[in-house]
Image 1 (tube, helix red, strand yellow):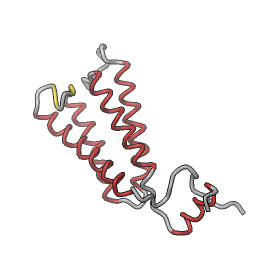
Image 2 (spheres, one colour; image 1 turned 90 degrees about the vertical axis):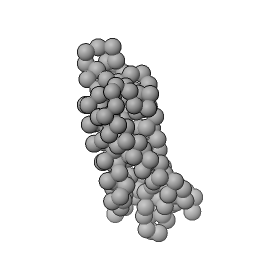
Image 3 (spheres, one colour; image 1 turned 45 degrees about the vertical axis):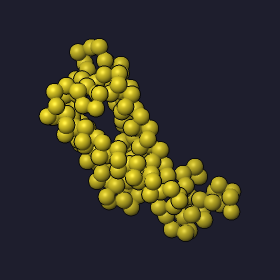
Image 4 (cartoon, one colour; image 1 turned 90 degrees about the horizontal axis):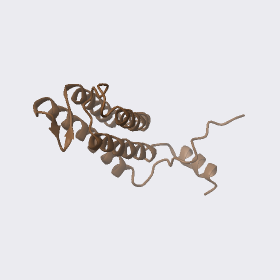
Length: 147
């Protein structure tokens, strides 16, 4: 019989889990605040260029991150990872179109770098906030050969 073992690389019930959840929460709050201010401030917020589309995307992503953080139950793990990869991909995609008419989010090089850093930080947080039972922890330790 094949057991459904967790990924050996991602710890379960990590002692620094509250710190990583706080990091995810701060990233969500930053995106929401950046987006809201972008609707009211003309062109630049926190040193990053923005427009209405960029502000809307930021608010939506921030609300998704904050919602997943509030729900928890390992939904936050999945959302943090998916949104982390999406932020990095969006940062790279907009970097490719900076000086073209396709830059509909009005990104600058600074905005691209900030979004990639936020994506990496969110991905890192998603790797360390998984919660599980003692059986899950035992299976994880057995898979890591640290028992």
